[in-house]
Length: 363
Image 1 (spheres, helix red, strand yellow):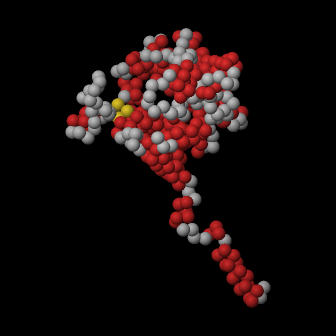
Image 2: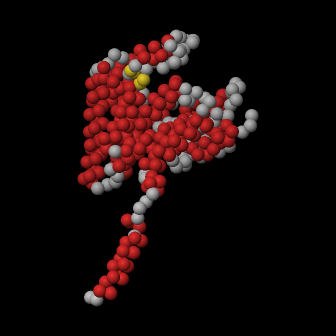
Image 3: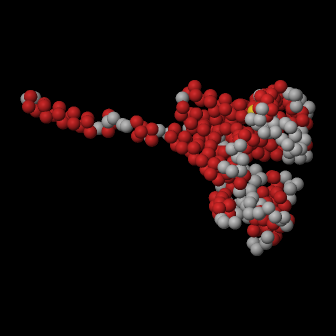
């Protein structure tokens, strides 16, 4: 090929390479914007900014307030770490909530009803949970079914077993007394105890931490230690550091989302429209909330009994698994214009909007 034919083609190739976006230099700020971790960081910041604005003056960020919501959030953080690992693998486990209840029944049944040491009950609960998780994984791999379908089935299986085992052995849906039998148990302390109690006593003595001024705990520090649940939550969240920042931030994002959802679902259990004056029984009932079917998502964000919270206040001794049937009977008998129907609402977001309008209006 003649030389004058080669030069233009080489120049054209170089020009095409220069135009190729795959080898263009990208600014650092653009690289940061397209990283998935940025969404997790922004979501976490927005969660804290939202509650700092809405509830900044309520004591939520005081030491005792932080401990209160921190303990609740730590439970979801532990769950979020496991859910995060599954999501990284492209899978999902819908049965995790039912598994928690089933494990609790195993511990309560063995320790309270059958009299085994609590540490034995905890180890058995771990073994049962691992075995059920392994069975879920085996079914997903062998059948080729999506993990969503397999774990959805186990959600209902475990929920049914929890109720059946409890009623068939104790004639009740709730087994109490675990806290009493767990006192002094070494393994129970590892998951439910507190550390640095002496440090907080000293901090209270020097005035850094407040003390109770009345009641049976008068003179004691309002924070008497760091719960082991928080320690486990931080340890599990930090463990993905060995694998890089992405799993950690994904876990933080899941933790933040679950914490917000839990706060919202607790918030909408009541309308909070009372100004502090005495309320009638009907007023107390109407301040509570039912979110019954056909609300499509209530069974997901309130799977146990919270979606019938008003009915629970009306009939507090009724087991949560019977609330759905009781609601259907009451709704059919009382009719659409009854006072009972006024406590029924369409879903979480309309309730959040109503509470926000009620909170922000001039008083």
